[in-house]
Image (cartoon, rainbow over all chains, first blue to last red):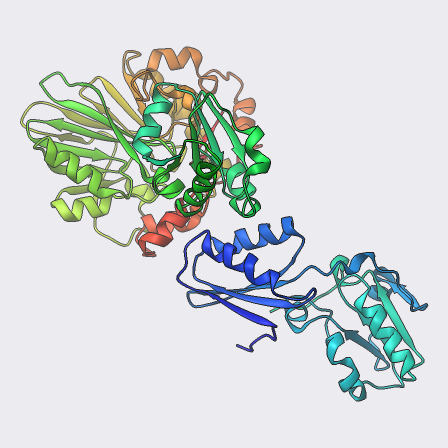
Length: 190
Length: 375
């Protein structure tokens, strides 16, 4: 089992309800917006509760991996990014991108700039994963000749990434709007 | 202020006596909507515990000041936390000891009546899930019918009244709960009877229960007369006990009838179900007291908490026994059926002996209401 990159791991193994959620809530306050938390728990009820708690508190529930008796829950702290204004001009809708992907092409790159744990639970087939925070250092992994479709959850991080790529001289960069939060096309998961 | 634990037994008494109670259920919303503690005079507020971590102030004006408040969660931990918080702001509240887990397993033994030669018949009401099981006692011997997996309760009860369990029956292969029949039979060396048509895939030894079988409990003449009555399953068998009681299994309930789809053959078994209810049962005495294997709503409980009614009364009042048109009947029992019980396939496989989940897993499989009826 590959281990997912997270910013903090919380050990709530052996604890009964309500402690896994109480501890998760505390741990969340110490994270920065957009960071990812892994919660390890053995209480079977924690999965439904963490998911429902995340929804009601605005955090993003990414998914759960079961390893034997241990449930590993992944959460991303709410970032308020949905309300930011986008700056990169060239955009494409989810539906248009979906249509484009029906004819596979070597000259298309899907660049997913979400965190590793978000990517793992749900991404477009053949997408390349480079989280926004690592983009600057890994920019050479991208082919400048390709058409690069940048995707994130709601179109904001991908907007930052598209601006960054344009700054670095990439000329064919398109932001996918809104992105994975409403993606209905083919996807891969664990 | 103090908090106190309320037991499932105490809550059961409030249900039976139709007492008022305010239930603050702190499980998540989908669990609450799927299944909760039902009571004729109960009121409810569902707020998940994780919405109250910062304090209970915001719900104070939604809690009554003139009623007992019971905080309920899945296993009790969260309800204790919320009860503590309510206590700190000045309320006297209780929490449900053991949570819904224990509620689901609580059995209330109720005496249904006496048998003609000095014996007795008891109904074990599984109040949280709506399952009913039975113990027929005569002259130091006991038979158990449709037992739940909480086998110690029957064993302890039999011991307390000085009876030895000699026969164990299941009216059919259950899909909504895990049968304790095999375990009880093993522990007591009793004979375990199953209808063979439901037991074709069963992986353990059993005695085939056929229509017309008579089994005697005790020295006195108490016959358990098996009546083949297919429809809920193909093997479903009813019992006439002491010519007074009709144990109807999952074929006929007080306010509903059995559903034919849980073993996957609804269309095939509609005719069997109709034949059992409209022909075979019609040939029986209307004075028989019907004792079903389930109830669906608390209105079906009698004043003493038991569930029973005269067959003649059901012929006039139960909607499912009063549908003249066969097509209409077919529609009722095959269309718009309620959701199937939680994990019903796994439960069937457990009852066949094909899988052997541990106790924790068995609890999880049985979560929720029984959903064996159509109304």
